Image 1: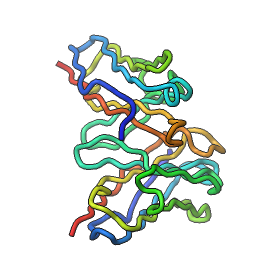
Image 2: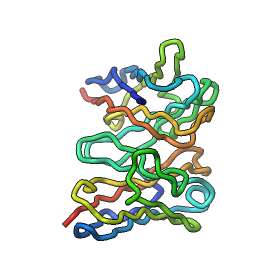
Image 3: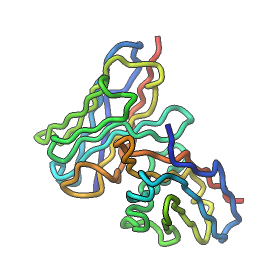
Image 4: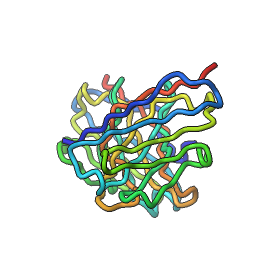
Length: 110
Length: 122
């Protein structure tokens, strides 16, 4: 039951910048931190961005997060072939008192 | 480095039970909340449950309330997900995930295990 909406797919050429949107409501994104996860094919997800815009240790600075109101975005600059993966936004949701994930976005490098 | 290893998955009939384990290493287990997240074949991620760092706080997604129970044993650095009355729609890879924050009830899943597959089928 994904309550955070993401575009199904995004594509870009190598070295381009792409953004992934994540749309929610006041009781999730607006009032709580947004986190982003990357899932490479056949692998477990990996935390990419937490607390809206913080990078975990070891994550490339090519990834950045932002939030405004009930929407959030993940930007990937200098797109590389290794960035081909599924990306999920997520946030705590006060209305269901649980953690909710976005619908997921598949990034393709052309 | 943080390591989480799930086990206990397998094929189980509808209505039966299964217990998943998650053995942690590389961090002070008793200081962090542990989440369980699942992913049905070819589908997206779905948060299932969380147990707070000291075991007192537990929270579940509505679809598993009353059927699944989370617990932890700090003496064994292990978290558990007890699953009862399993349904076909519970078929998924189940991941255990360490929270980002110390001494938290669990708000931010951070480090993931590799997952264990649960298949509910007759």
